[in-house]
Each structure stands twice: as C-alpha cells, then as structure tokens.
Image (tube, rainbow, N blue to C red):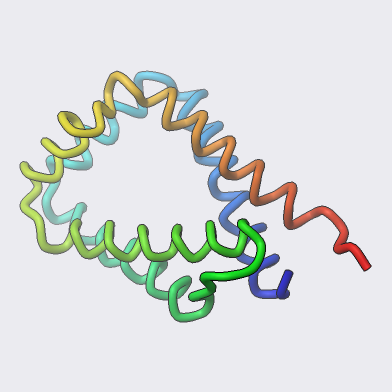
Length: 134
C-alpha cells in the first residue's frame, strides 16, 4: 500500500475505534447528545464546515478507486464525509434531525453504529499495521 493510504488507514482506523468505544461507553448519552446537536443549527453549521473540510482533504489527497480494498474504503469514506458535510451546511436542522432519527433509526441503533465504527476501525488499523509483503 502507498504511504498515504497507510497513513489514512491508521488515522481513520484510530478515529473509528476511539469513537466506537466512546459511543459504547457513553451508552444512551450518545443518542441524547446527537439529538441535542442536531437541533442546534449554528453548531450543525460548524460541524458541517469541519466535516466537509475533512472529507475534501481526504478526497483531494486520496482519490484512489483501485488497489487494495482498504484504499477504496478510505476514498469512499472521504467522499461520504464530504457529502455529509455539505448536507449539514445546506439542509435545515429539522430535516437533518428527521433523517438521523427516522431514516437511520439512530436512537434505537446507536450501539449497532458503534460496533460498525469499531469493526471498520479495526479493519483499517490492522491492515495498516500489518507489515507489507515483499
């Protein structure tokens, strides 16, 4: 894997593992915190700016659609972050809240999302930390 892919796998993998653990440890507080966040339009704007920035940084630095699956996962994650950030900037807060709570069933599925984050993080981290084959 390219050095940039390894770096981004380590970065995203660490982030996902830590976020997943925090979500599991905080339990129901996570769903309540997200609900409060989604109803705060100025804060959602700031979150959108930073999410869009992070997503665009990944897309510009790593727009790879071939090679190892991890490389493609990094690229897809970057595009998803960019789109999510843009949606946070343009959609009204009530629509965002409805999408998270109705379409994604976030409150009921918070632990499942935490486990998905942990699994994705472990996949990226373990792949990036494994020595390259000669």
